[in-house]
Image (cartoon, rainbow, N blue to C red; front, side, top):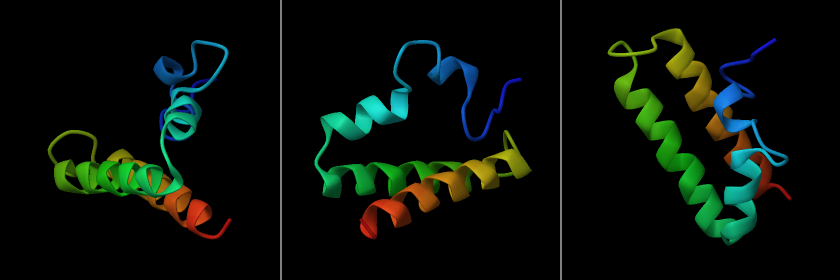
Length: 71
């Protein structure tokens, strides 16, 4: 079953999930910035496109940034 917030099908089609490839390509600081930027994007468009799902995606990116700050 597809999980559009945590593991969207269009990002998990290959052998590695897109977010993991992005993280591997960036420094830890760059990746945290990437996560923050994506969270802002989803917050910005809430109510214009995905509603509650946009808020869930923003939270997902914030949680990923928080996790990376604490490792």
